[in-house]
Image (cartoon, rainbow, N blue to C red; front, top):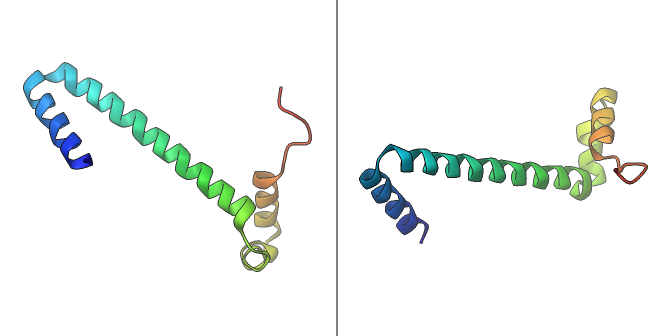
Length: 82
């Protein structure tokens, strides 16, 4: 289905000119940004919530700066954001 939609979009672009290309480029940039944001959110959730104690020790325990970075990234706020 994605291939069909892609081909339809390419055909539309080739028939309708630059204005449609700019619109399609804007849509692609927006979808790419959303996908990157979702990937980052998933990675942060995994790093902060799904990491095992052993994995944490191997990755962060020997390096205080990295451990502090993990704590800063994964710490829950002490109060509700305004």
